[in-house]
Image 1 (cartoon, rainbow, N blue to C red):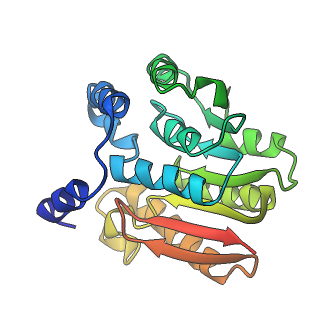
Image 2: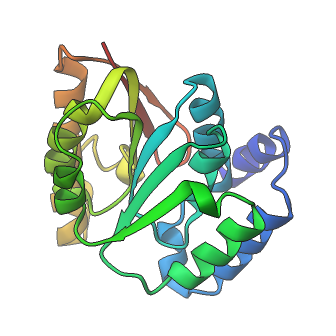
Length: 216
């Protein structure tokens, strides 16, 4: 997507409120790492999906500065819960400040540790309406393996970065060795989800690619 077309897309969406604008600005100050934050339009999509699914429990794999957790929490009713996890709490202060400002801090539970452990601790039974995965790409196969059993019938598995800058078409085009490896893994994940008989799957060309997989 060209920058001009993305600009038009953003202007065609409900604009971000003051809290989200502030969180985006704080995250931008992190420099190159700011790219780990979900784009605004994707955050808006998460909120809308949570509302449409009437979700009460969401799992957010990859907290960073907290925008995806905030977006999911805004889509939940009072008493809903977002379980978000990360391997570091370095950004938790920024996240928690904005969760409080958005009046959703009481709906968000942060867990420090590897996502594989956190997902495993949830017990392997259907407990979640949404699982959103936006973390290290090499572990996506394991995250999906652990996430699908956690979804209630009708629940959504949502994956970020499924296009991986377009390298999923041909991973060998990537100059960087890690990107090449990640593209190979993501290509296999995309194929596996499309063939998974437990799921109805659709890929959207929003941001760096988002896959929605509904558990049957």
